[in-house]
Amino acid sequence: MEKTMEILVKNEETRLYTVAFPNPGKETIILLHGGPGVPDGLGPVAEFLQPHYQVITFHQRGTLSSPCYNSNYSIAALLSDIDKVAERFKAERFHLLGHSWGGLYAQLYAYQNAHRILSLFLCSPASGTGTQWAQMMKEAASYNKSKCAGNEWMNMVKDAILGFLGKDEAYERLFTQFCLNCNKGYHVSDPVPVMVDHISAKAVNRTRRAILKEPEQDPMIDQGFPFTITYGDDDIYGESKKYVQERYPYANYLTIPRSSHFPWLQNEQDFYRIISTHFGLLPQ
Image 1 (cartoon, rainbow, N blue to C red):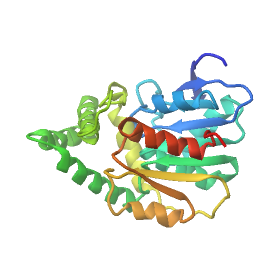
Image 2 (image 1 turned 45 degrees about the horizontal axis):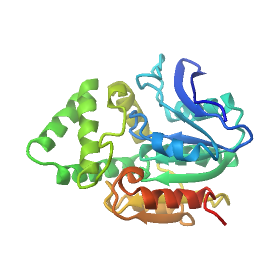
Image 3 (image 1 turned 60 degrees about the vertical axis):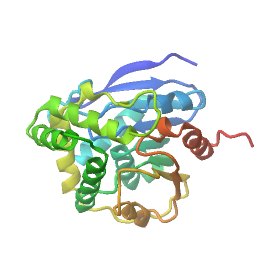
Image 4 (image 1 turned 180 degrees about the horizontal axis):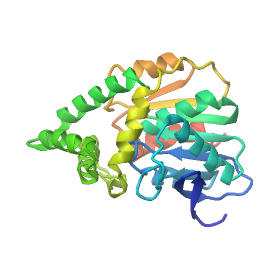
């Protein structure tokens, strides 16, 4: 097995910082991080899968290490990034594993490119585009408010406003508090598992705008590939989860006990058992 590769994948005026675990002859898994615009957090998952697959993860366009020089944050541009990363590694077909916004990103890609998908694994996926995204954001705000103590909630509100106005450091503080809220009550080694210092307010705001403008997704016909969707039993979502279930009634839905939004940190045993089942890693 080769060592880890770190490269920049070019997609027109965007350079995508990409980390790959080459594994010749093995199927490819592409990991999609959340946010939008908050890399990466999925390192432990990549390390778990890399002995068995060629694993690729990339920082989404506009984040610190993936400059987007033409400021194109359209959904079409985001989907083309996955194509370019797959093309660079000569992966005609591949598995997609997405977390949070990355889970919605994976849905959007699969809807248009089902012929390329070997399987989908969505971990705490965002609920949908358009008004479904707006509803989900309200639910996430309620979750955060319930977890905050003292001045934490008011500081989150202030930082959300400043981030919307373009202040990178405000979003750094906001997403730091978000991670801390999700991990309150859990014994985790890294309570802020994402790279908050790589956040770009412009990327967050422009991508969110594109998501809000995107029409709501129609249900997708069962394509026959393995499809697993997980949520924590104390996840950030409310009723909006129903939109995912309505789009994919045939998927395998699992609730991970004793976990919130980062189950690979909060309940490693159950999370890795589920992911091993999905990818056929358990002994037969």
